[in-house]
Length: 239
Image 1 (tube, rainbow, N blue to C red):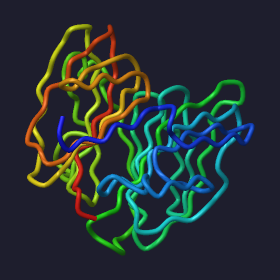
Image 2 (cartoon, rainbow, N blue to C red; image 1 turned 60 degrees about the vertical axis):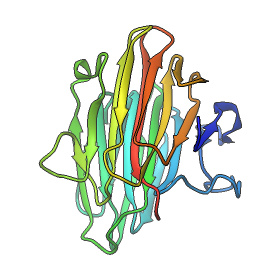
Image 3 (cartoon, rainbow, N blue to C red; image 1 turned 180 degrees about the vertical axis):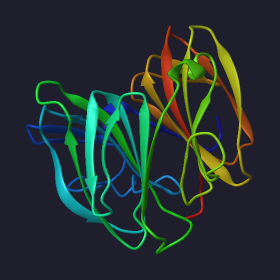
Image 4 (spheres, rainbow, N blue to C red; image 1 turned 45 degrees about the horizontal axis):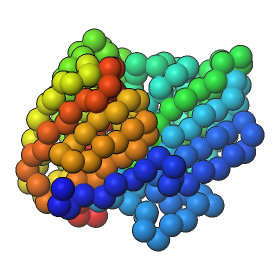
């Protein structure tokens, strides 16, 4: 397939801090790869494992759209806007850091691990008023279809952010195929296999492999295993 980049799971950056085991799709903290600085406005995709009771102490962010998706367990959140919340598996959390925000994120449970994706997108508006939101997703709505979990429109399905981006999650039966049409001209797609196996044209991907696709209007996803799970991000390519 033309205009694609394959990101194999084994080629990600890795950090083991004992309580935290992190895989970095793009350069982050002590992991630096000049070929993996970003994909369009997608700046960070961290695949984290956090031991029980552990987490990230209070720290700052600014001018970044931060999306967190728990995959197993629950995340405990506190921030400088006074928000205190628990984000469970099946939910999605979003923060617009804007002019500046402080927050902490911990594993809510003392005796269970937490697995999550943390995603940063470069916003299309700088110095906005910081905001926080979370939403419970109906995971039954992603069986053999793409469930929209994020968009630029606060009135649309899912949470919203300051960027012309759409996120979808789906769980597919083996052999199921589904076409995808780019939401906005000039956008590209970064898609990760959360679990299972799939094929996009002639490209086969497995657990935590990802693909970046640009300069196309549509493509087809084929599930090669039962209960294949994906995260698809339709995002601007111009930073």
